[in-house]
Length: 290
Image 1 (cartoon, rainbow, N blue to C red):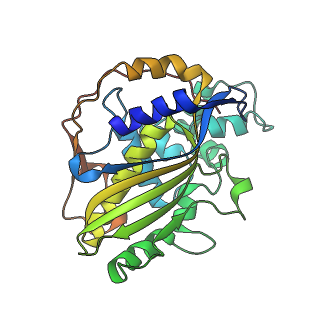
Image 2 (cartoon, rainbow, N blue to C red):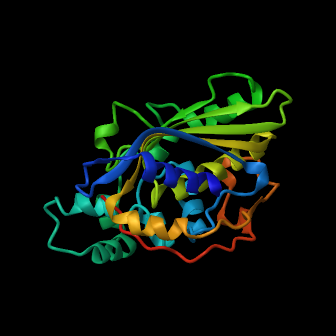
């Protein structure tokens, strides 16, 4: 994806050094946007391996409305592990357990997971129950019956509940747009905070996948994914990894295949979502800042 590489280069060229909440430090710019044509391939980075299974399972978890990490942990998805663990270390139940020990207990002890594995009212809660409103179903109904509305919005930022979340939403708002011929569906995502090396590759793939899924259940074809950023940054301890990635040449994008029989957004399972032709360069490990 040349658009992603251009973003990395822009930050390295134009970014300013800034302190941050995690004390890691970043190089950051404010305000950036790129557009990806989803008809030309699925935008999963090829200059490093991105674990598509994790992207897919996290998205299905969001759609389900779940906010407890246990279903992810049971499927080997580690995206959210650090945040409930950080909360756990501040609880009276903490006895010096390592992150690995904590995750084993989440996996094997349902009562422990119920108490310590929940992230608070994060994405899935807001998508499916924003102060009593099922935004996702409302959005799909509106896309089907009022395609040219300018109110096709889904928000994860709920000021009444944001302080209860283990991590306030980074990807905060989506808007969808149906083409004049009622053939195509496009999505624009606004992301207030973006860890470009680790987080953004997942975010691009996740919202591109969601656009394809919503397009199918509404009778459209996915067209554009527009990614708009607020504070978009590279952590200081990712700079060497970024240099490695920029030294690699992007390859042809893979192809996404969805089970065409699925017409209900909640009915998708992992077996209904297939990625073909993904041939990435090797993974580039990096530490997540919590």
